[in-house]
Image (cartoon, rainbow, N blue to C red; front, side, top):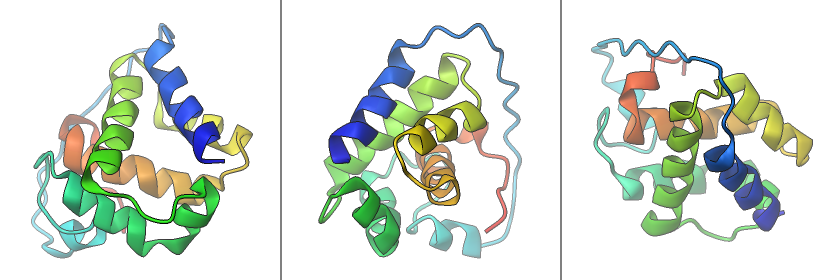
Length: 129
């Protein structure tokens, strides 16, 4: 399953969908938001904090068959999600690719939101936590 997730994320970087995303970063002041995403702050490029988010959610570990995300692996996941968004994929398209690989949509949506929070804040819109 881990390879399936990696393949889904890698496919995002190869996709040339001509959809235009309309990112609109919003400022927010709720200090709990960063805690929800493993700590850190908006746009911090912090793979360690993102790894904390991924490791806390045991369903992510089970779905990806990973025992642990280190900072480098989390950074790779986050950057792959951001590449997909930059290429014009919507969040729903990214999540649907994960669903096609038997990863629950709600769980992977949290993965996408964490990637946006840490690695591509221009796509983060103060997601509900």
